[in-house]
Length: 165
Image 1 (tube, rainbow, N blue to C red):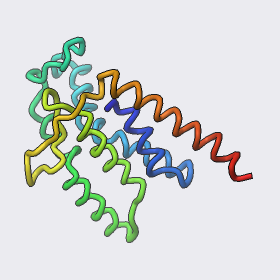
Image 2 (image 1 turned 135 degrees about the vertical axis):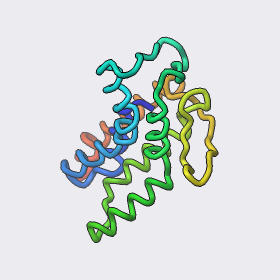
Image 3 (image 1 turned 60 degrees about the vertical axis):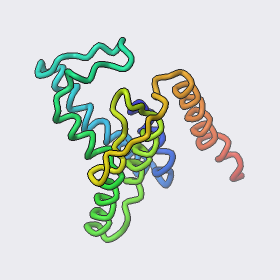
């Protein structure tokens, strides 16, 4: 799934309490991709890595540096996410509910990444098991995702408020 959709899903799932919570959940929702692919794009624009041809489906992954695959394993693992969630809980003495947006990101990716390009290693480092899902770039996934996000946000910002009166 694209990182903006992840951010929006994270915001609506884990950040409805306040604007501050929404911003945190929005950022946590996109964090797994920013901390892996974002670094790759900085490398590409900085001339340290070759630019992939995104017209190819899936894009070639043989030009992506190994560090990006390693970072992807860390940022897309429910095991690592769980460890970090409980570590934050221990540090702050309360659960950081907005951090759940990171977990939502991983769960969505499990089913919207195929084995052809960055399957989601959600059980890493315990297992290399992954689900070969339907790529988010396919219209059958991308278009319903956009309409569902539009509907949910419209309900949250417009219809829900009217129901309170």
